Every structure is written in structure tokens, then in C-alpha cells.
Length: 639
Image (tube, rainbow, N blue to C red; front, side):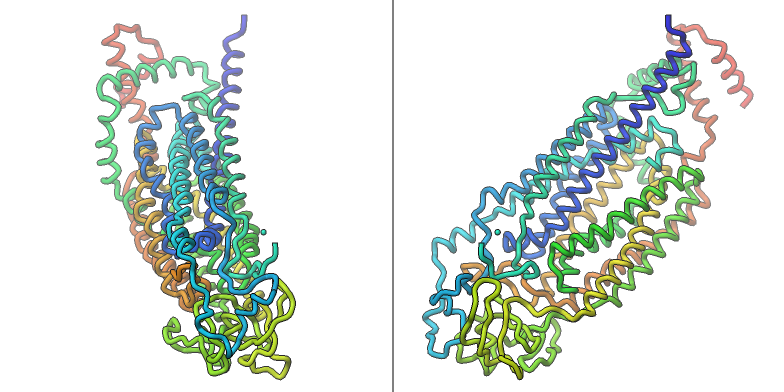
């Protein structure tokens, strides 16, 4: 016969491995959802070009994730704790995988991507229509096919991406509130913080679209795989640290009796409104939520539109920018999270100290953010857009009075809305070979060279090649400075996340924790995640210098932005939002000095309340009282 002590020890090891298994599975789910989210943000520019849509619609697509999350967040946060939480999280991971697959679906339903062009890759006789010719009549200007025009206008395949992203948001809903509440319920309090053919465009061209859909198929598979462990985890676990207690069985029985008695007194929804009232009457919780909304607005602007900003600012390809962002951002963020959790666990930092630590670290990172105003480059020099044909910079705001035609190309009968940029050997770019006054060409595809260009004032051969001219080498150096500063910013920011989030968790009562996290997420989605990418996308559209043109003459995706105006919005608006959040933070620090947090409440009060309930249960059920109970009763009388 197995000894009781040995049985308890075996059960303790089993419970320990199950909580560790849940932590491992939850980490996998976090990695999978973060992978999907980061990849979605990095592919927004590609999606914009693929479907020829403005940035405001791209922002709406990005915000659809928050809409999906918003639809279920409060429901899942409150009722999820009364269900089998690991299984609910597992189902959420499967739904996220379904959403990622739906995002990639337009690639298989649409035809091959056709970018806006006037140049034929083969450079045959018919392709010379894009060159300057004074004898060419305006009637030779290509007219759109009505059938193709109608088909293009009705093509709304980006809706698949939006719906898929919305479903991905629905699936992500249970991971954070239910995962956190599960850990908080069954782990020690000090452990919870730890826990494409011939081409005439290059990679740097603003019309380039890569195989963006492949990554979403990978994300779909990863999300489904991470769901598997959750289906094998139990609904509840003994509290970590109690598994080796010989009285754990009695404690579990008492807990069951207490839950049963409480369940008789109130239904499953009767405590919802009291919990809501308690949270809204908690000034620290309300102010922390306001700070979160302001900061989330800032972070969404910064992270969502960073690939587009760096591409336009430093003249690099989307693929290169995304790779650099991953290399310079992910390691410091992961290390910062880990160190932040270890510090909270090792030194058992109180909530008040955690609040000061989070405030100071976040303020340091905020001051580093202003260095981004130093690492700047000017616009691409494009004749008629950002510079004159004499290579003089245009000074009008947003270049409203741009004139893409010049005396050297007026007799060429060029299309003024096309975007087939060429770079002259004078270092100046032109919107097309025709607008550069080029009369003939040599070579095929991306190696095509245009010669006898009347608008190119150079002592050389007056030739041009495909693509925009490269920015100065100083821009590459400034990009490195930007990325190096970003490493320190990401690390400091991630250090502050865990202490800051612990303020949210520990300023609420244990029974309100799951609903508090869900409600906090709800307000972030409503006032941050959904509107921010939409309104900021619209602001970015206002800085567009040249829009792409569809077959019907409708505007497509923006091909070039006024980077100076873009920079002022991209850096200035987040700085203003975050700056206002620190004013609110000061009030929280003052309140923390006066208010007593739930975690600081005398534990004896909780014990006395539980003993009082147990006493009533014993009297009603006529259950014999144990010696331990009588001792606790005497203690209660003395207190």
C-alpha cells in the first residue's frame, strides 16, 4: 500500500509539471500570435501595393484585428474563467490559424500581380511608345479596355485579408486574460511576473510586391500546432506551493464547499455588474487604463508604419527594412522581458516600487525617442515633384504646385500620371523616360538603358537607367544610428513592461482580475487599436506626392511621399501622445502612496472571512468540526 506522504509528493510533482506545461504551451501561443501580428505589420506595405489601396484602408485592415478581439474580449474574460480555460485558449489558437490562412487566400484567387508600367521588358518595337517622340500624336495614348476597367474596379479581394485578420483577432482573445488568470490562480504570486519572368522593377521600387502570402500560411500552421497542448491540460490545479501540504485534500474539499455555497447564493452573471462597479471605482485601475490607451496609440503608430517610414526615409527595400527591424528589435525585447520578470521575482518588488521603476524606465526610453529627429534624410530628388528640372529644391508645402512637365519634354507628348521612374547620370530622377526626354533605349528588362535624354543636363552621355536614384551614403549611416538607438529603446521599454503590468494585476482584487484584464484590453481596442491605424493612415495619405494609376485612371497606392512631412507626423504625434501619458502617471504615483492595494490587505481578514463561511456551512450541514477548525475559531475570537 502506498504511503500517504509519498502519494502527496507524487501529486505535487504532477501538479508542478502541469503548471510548467501550461506555461510552456502559453509561451508557444504568445510566440505564435506575436509572429502573426509582427508579420502582418511588416507586410502592410506589400498588401497596400498588391491591392492598390490607400494607407487609410490598410489601416482599417490592420484595425480589423482589434475589432475581432473587441467582439469577444469582455465575454471571454468574464465567462472564460468559469469554463475550461486551457481548452478555450487552444480553440483560440486554432481560430487564429484559420484567420491566417484566410489572409493568404487572395493569392490563390487573384491572377498574377501586374504592376503599373509603360515599359515592356522585351524592348521590342512596340515598346518604344514610352520614349520621347515629337511626331507622336496624342491619339496614340493607350485607352483602357472597358471590360478590364470594370473588372478592376470590382476587385475587392482585400476584404479577404480584412476578414481573415478579424478572425485572427477573435482567436487571440482568450490567450491573455485567461492565460494570466490561470497562472495567477495556480502559481505563487512571486512567480507570476516571470512567467516572379522578366522585370523592369527592382526590390527597392515602390511597386515591388513580394510573396507576402507565404508567411501567413506558415503562421497558420504554427498557430494550429501551438493549440494541441491546451487540450490535454486540466481545468484547475492546486495552488502552487500547497501541493506538498498534507492538508491539501482538506483545503480542496473546503474550497469546493465554499464555491458550491457561493453558487447557490448568486448565479453565474450576478457578480458581473458589482465587479464592473468596483473596477470603475478603482482610481488606480482607471488611470492606468487611460495611460495604456495613450501609450498604445503611440506604439501602434510607431510599430505599424515603421517599415513604410524607414523605406521612404532611407531608400531601402521593404525586404531589407523588415529584416533589419527583426534583427534589431526582437532580441532586445525578448531579453528585456526576461530580465524584467526575473528582477520582479528575485527581489520580490512591491507594486509601489514596480510603478516607480516602470515610470523611470519608460521616461528614459521616451527621451531616447527624440533622437530620431536627428537621423533624417531628405526626399528622393525627382524632377517635377521634389526638385525642379534644374535640380533646385521645390519649397512649396507638400509640393501642391508641382509641375512634372518642362520645356525639354513638352514636345514628347508624355503621360504625366505614369510612374516608371528612371535615374539620370546627373543624379536626378524622373517619373518616366519620356519625361526625361529620352529618345531611344538599349537592353532589356531591368538592365535597360535610355539614351539621348534632352532633360538630363550632364557633361556625359545624357543617359538614364531604370529606378530612382539612390540616396546619399550618409543615409545608410543614419539608418544604422537609428537602429542602434532602437536597440537600447526596445530593451529599456521591455524592462518596464512587466513592472508596469504588475501594477494593473495587483491593483485589482483576485476575483476581479480576469474581468479587469479583459476590460483593460477592451478600452485599448476601442480607443487605440481600432481608430489609430485608420486616422494615422489618413494622415500619411495627405503626405503623398504621387499616386499610382489603375487601368481605369483611378488612383491606386501611393508611390512617393513627402518624407519631411511624413517624419514630422510619424515622430511628432507619438511624442505628444506619450508625453501626455506621463502627466497621468504622476497622479498614479501619488495615489499609490495613499491607497491600500488588494495585495497589501491583511491576509488574516481573508482567512477570517473564509472561516466564517465554513462555520456557517458546518452548522447547516451538521458537519463535525476538526481540531484545526476550533483552533482557528479561537484565533478569530481573539482577533
